[in-house]
Length: 123
Image (cartoon, rainbow, N blue to C red; front, side, top):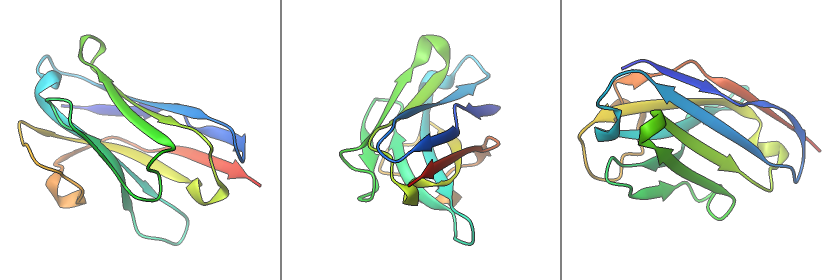
């Protein structure tokens, strides 16, 4: 599967953005998809994940502000980001793994990655 993330941009603190991760392939509905991000000078970190049966899980830093969802008819997973903070500034990546259940929060659990999209939040 090939993934393409989009929707990043420059916003002010408190604003919202919606990222999209579009996948190729007809079996995308059976993939668990995760969002990760990498801030300047920091390691890539887990943000959120949605399993192929719809279970979701969030990093504590985004819980209550971000929502991950999917539209299998469009082969797309979304990350709605509200109440953005300057510390959310990072390149955001989507990643996917087929037919694995469980709470997948580690990069090594995802074999497929898209190019990132940059989110910049000004104070």
